[in-house]
Image 1 (cartoon, rainbow, N blue to C red):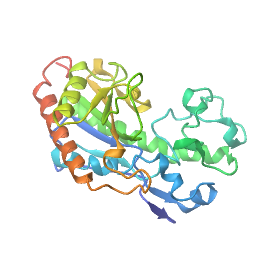
Image 2: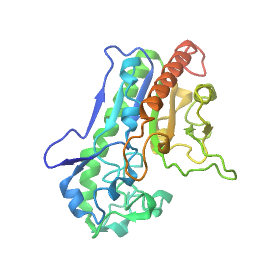
Image 3: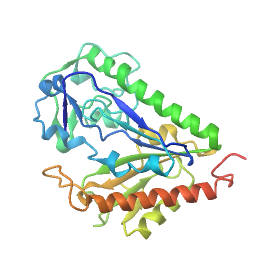
Length: 294
């Protein structure tokens, strides 16, 4: 965790020397730069407030530039602003003042406390001791959310223009106690493609196959099918494919101390192999009209 008292880069892109793959990697929830003013407004301590982080996911996928793809990562924390939401999914109970009429106040995510400006962190723990001014929420959206998505759009547009297609890998982690509904299966990795609407079946099946070959217990869409980013940017008919990947954080993080386990380098290395394999697969089959435009 980094305590930030002044200016810091809200997000950053690590570029390859030359982009050789039609991929963009994105880590929107691994930010760990916590403004002091935010911590002072919170009712949670500096450990509890980190429960919503996708801990070290940016490091798990840090090989992206080395294999030829850009990596966009947030430095701001998810508890402060969640860019994997619509821009104005806001809970009116959180704010002093009136939300704009275009705010989506009725979504399931807002009802669950996990809107664009979240009300809770994991384990249903309220973040704020008091209501926030509406202008504070709108300011975060204008100064962080919109620039972040503008950057992501530029990366995808550039990739699509250069390769005739683009594959977005939206990288996340999930709690270690997640089970597949109706079973005792604890997945190591979940691939989300919005039930086939955000990416071609070929890409999704290849991702699952490579993960299983590496020894991971991998499933598709249950219980995580993909969030706003996957849904919003995945347009297979336009050769824009988006997959969400959720890594079970119990594999590599002690969920009590939030410190890396000794297995972290091994998980990181396996995911690099996965990234390389998926890159080769997509590059070899990009001439297929189900993946790339003719």
